[in-house]
Length: 180
Image 1 (cartoon, rainbow, N blue to C red):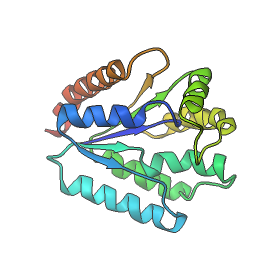
Image 2 (cartoon, rainbow, N blue to C red):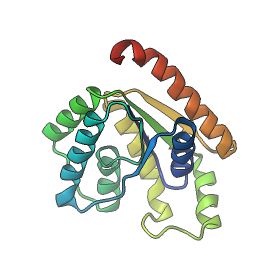
Image 3 (tube, helix red, strand yellow):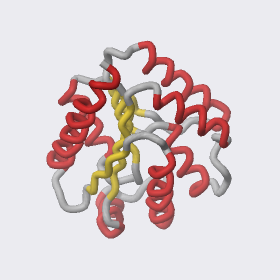
Image 4 (spheres, rainbow, N blue to C red):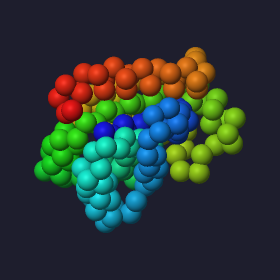
């Protein structure tokens, strides 16, 4: 079982992912940006790990297949490393594993304030955030996986974690019929 948390920077992904990990005693994976020539290799390794360990819940703080489709075109102004055939393949493979995607977001002025409070960002300049937010909205419609959105604008991180745990619990009850 795989829970993927993705979304723009400063929207609570890591905090929510760690809360889910603690609640479900899940395996936590921080999926960082990889060099282009290693990205597909890494995604393939993760997929194999997920398939080989169906008894575990994996919580991915980002997932290269989702995030690289957004960040590469926005940050590096070039197409994603994933070809159309590759996207279809990874969607098919993820659909063989119980997978839920939770996308985090916040209003742009909230993200801007978080940037200021945290002293900026070493990778993502604030002026790119709107394009990244739009990218997540587009990719969420094409993943072929169940997607839930969490808006972290006006609630505490504990409330966001509770919302995510609720989504996962409901999703697990429905998926249990299909996988267990």
